[in-house]
Length: 114
Image 1 (spheres, rainbow, N blue to C red):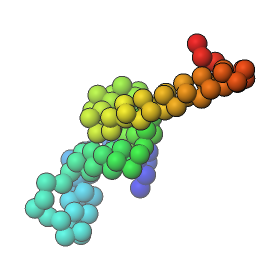
Image 2: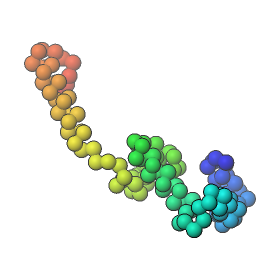
Image 3: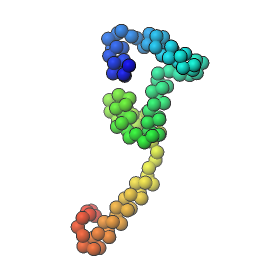
Image 4: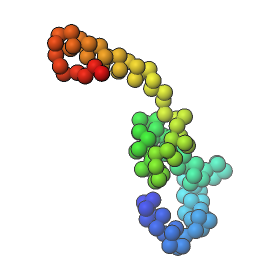
């Protein structure tokens, strides 16, 4: 059952969050032999988001995956999980600057330096 179908069913009142937990989630947890663990649909959602971020998903991908209205909602929740890539940016900007200066010194106009 996709998230969209499930959301439509919930919106139509066919399933409530409580009945979904009772009818579907609890049976799935029991069927997987995971009773007694602190599992919930919300915990699973956070785990999926965390794994996507660890796998390299950008904020817009995670936003769409979770159905957040905008990227700021995703960043407010998960910003600390994205790696600090400042060092990579410094290296990339430095390399671009070096190429631009080299091209300028050779009279090439392929790079804008300002």
